[in-house]
Image (cartoon, rainbow, N blue to C red; front, top):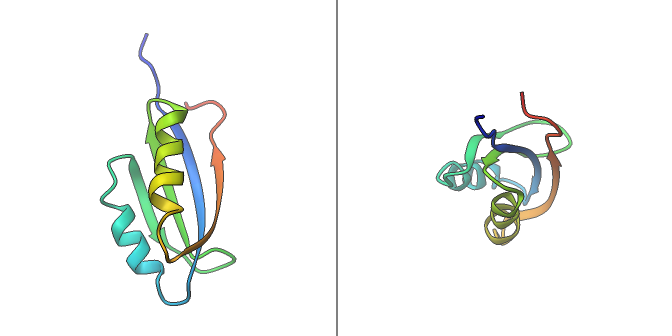
Length: 82
């Protein structure tokens, strides 16, 4: 049986004019599958994949939320990866 990775979608609000910079840094994180600056309520979206919730937790709390340009995040964990 092949184990599937956990997937998380993280929506980010950033300081004005910093979303591209934040996205550029997050693309260097190994768990990042996609990182894009977007228009709308949020400034960026990041998709992470990791073997366990602890790894996603580390990225969200120790990398993303420690970025001085990130104001707020909203994380959604995929229920059942297909």
